[in-house]
Structure formats: C-alpha cells, structure tokens
Length: 124
Image (cartoon, rainbow, N blue to C red):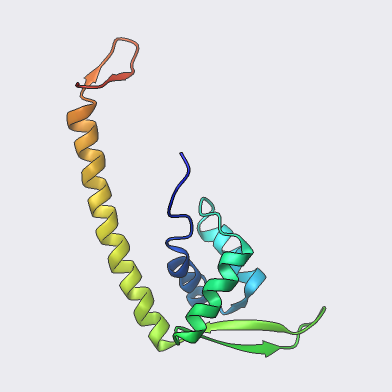
C-alpha cells in the first residue's frame, strides 16, 4: 500500500536534522537517512521545504566556502524554527497516542482469536 502522505512530516524531520547540525542540502539528506532511515525523502522535496521554511523564518542560510568544490548554502535553525520544531514534537506525540490506541484496539478486539498455526483470525 502506497502512502498518500509521503513527505507529510518532511518539515519536522528537516528541522530536526538542522537543529542537530547546521548543514547544506546534501548534508541534510544524509543526516535524514541517518536519523530516519525509513523516511524516504527525495532531494526535490527537501529543497522545496527548505525554501518554504526559509521564507517563513524557521531557518536561515548563508553561502560558505567549501574545501573541495563550489560554495555551499548552509542552513541553520532560528528561534522561530525551534518553536516550530517543538510544535511538531507535540503534534507527533498526539498522533502516536492516537495510532497506539488504534493498534491496541485492533490487536485486542479485531484480531483476538489465534489459530492453531499461530496466525491471527479476524473476529468478524
């Protein structure tokens, strides 16, 4: 089943990556793969969200010299971005609580009869 909400939490993860370490676009992508390996965001989504977050004042950027290659645009989280990150945290905690209620109800009510082969049988 494909997710309809691919990238839904992209801003939260991007802000988290930048809060952990100011970085350039590819560095942010690498950090995201490290902290959220199951969350597959492509570079287009990341750069689009970076642009949006810069416009809303969640992050700032500046061009810095690179030892190897051209200058890199390095992003840094702002105070407003930290506030937004806290709001994402609270929202994700609420979502997790709701999802845990779903899973508990599903496991306890829908799938409560176990078949002899160890598989669950729907209670329908």
